Length: 119
Length: 354
Image 1 (spheres, one colour):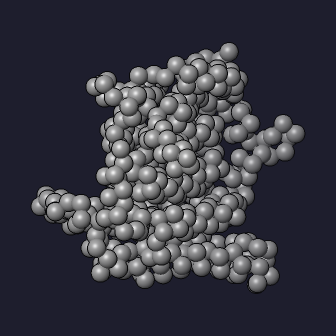
Image 2 (cartoon, each protein chain N blue to C red):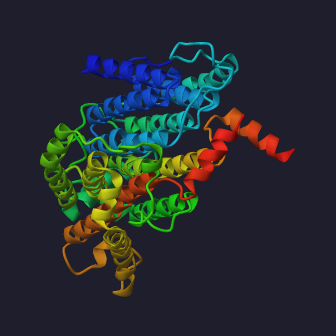
């Protein structure tokens, strides 16, 4: 076991990951499920950037003094954030389309309506 | 410093919890914006200013606007199970809590076995790998990086060392726009002028233009746009670059759409201009990738060009900026238009529903 204070951002990752997953599982509201997906995604970024941090590090600008933070996770997270917003946009478009078809964004209602239409 | 970190960690967990428990999606979205801003501060503390800029522009800006559009385009009534409880919070669901606990406990064990955050001997940031060779970290920050004379090593990784990843990302953003257009059944980014607006059918006065809002936005937009251009062009030297600059430029147009209405803004921006901006962005990026092969280097070898590498990286940043700015603006405009269909018909169906 290591010092909890040193690893606090890793523990925050677990917390946010769990909360995001909980939102996706529990909330019947599709928009809130998308927000939960975003929370999960962001929590993973937190691990990446935390792992690239060095005690007392400067930002990865080579004009600054050593030590620098590792620029690789920063670059990955940068692209991942833009991929994330693209993903959110597609997900929300699907939600809006579902609302257009079923008149609700409640998953249980949508499931019920789909069963009704099958009968 | 450690006190600030702990306060921020608490803030993040508290806001995330509120997002999970608030029932109204608008409230959850507002708290999510606060969460993203807190996260941007965490990135600064973790010495990642590039990520912080992107998070502030995307997480707290564009993402929240997309969520708000989705909330505005839909109606949310709690299902029968939730009715009767007037609290704006949802009670915890025991089954979901058990699942989450089963996943979280192994995760806690895993992360506590990681090297300490900030440990200079951790594999991720050690200068030498266990075999005694110089590590990737050394490669990105050491002599190889110094020899290229590109001060911002995040831009260096994005544009030189891992530029194929960036190409993949560019393709994803482009594909997402096409995906949204397909899902919403639209062939155009902005509405044709003769198409009836959904808002006009539902509400008599769709946009209440506040004089405070319009005046403030008129003052702010030019500055925001110029800041976006500055971020894009200085990406090789300072924190920032095509991603951040592009999103900030797109945000200035989105701000306009928020205050003056997305239809007038869509017509003002002009779909053809937006499509050209995106196409030029992708084209410029791809031609730099293929061009180095044609002049005798390997594919996407930025150093193969006879001109200064910094200049090539700057062109790449401009290409990314154009693409990201264009895509983000187009995404918001298309989402604001919503799915194409006969609106009155679907409203009828809604009324018929028991």
